Image 1 (tube, helix red, strand yellow):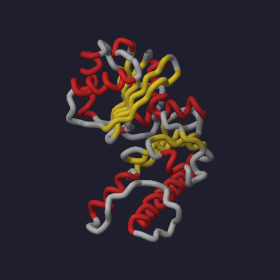
Image 2: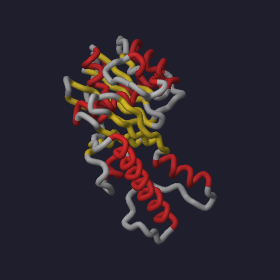
Image 3: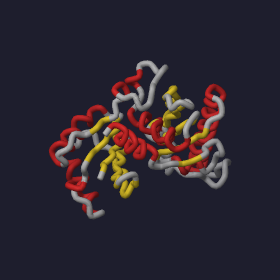
Length: 254
C-alpha cells in the first residue's frame, strides 16, 4: 500500500492507495508543533479504525507547503514505517515542466501534484482551482507544462478577517444562503462571503481563459463542491485530486 500525505497550512490530508485505487482517506488539522511521535499515534489510531497496520504501508509520498513539518514527517516515515519518504520538490522533478515561473522553487508541491493529476484526467489546456487556506488557480498547457496561476485569500481567511476586524460582526458558518439579500447580519455576511467568492472565482477564471484560451476547469479542496454548486465556470470537482497527483508522481518515479 502507498500512503500519500498532503501537508497544508490548515489541514493534513492522508490517502491510502492499493494499486491505483484510493481505499481510505482522512482530513485532520495541521498542528505545526506536534512531534513525529504524536503524529505517529494519530496515524496509528486512524489506521486501526480501518484495520490497517503500519506494516501494510510499503511506500510514502508527500507534498508539503509547511517546511517546518518536513523533517517531522521524514522522521515519522523512518522511525515508524521504516521507509524513506518521497517528497515532491518542484526543482528536482521533470514530470511537470515549469518553463516560465520564477523562481520554480516557489511553486507549491501541492500545485505540482494537482497539475500532474489534472493533465492525466483531462489533458490540457486546463485550470485547477484548489480551495484551501489560500485559493489557488493553476494553468496547465496542452503539453502538461505548469504555466503559473493566481493566489487569492481563501474564503475561510476572508470570513475570519470579517470577524476579527469588525467588532460587531460574529464568526459565521460558511454556507450557501437561500437568497442574496440577507435579512439578518449573519445572512448578509454569508451572502457577501459566498456570492462574493463565487464572483471572484468566475472573474479570475474568465480572465485566465482570456490569456490561456479555452480550458476545462477542475476544482478541488474542502470547499470545492460548495462553490461549484453556484457557478458553471467550474466543469468538474475532484475532491481527492491532490492525492491522486501524489500517487501518479510516485508511480512515475518509483
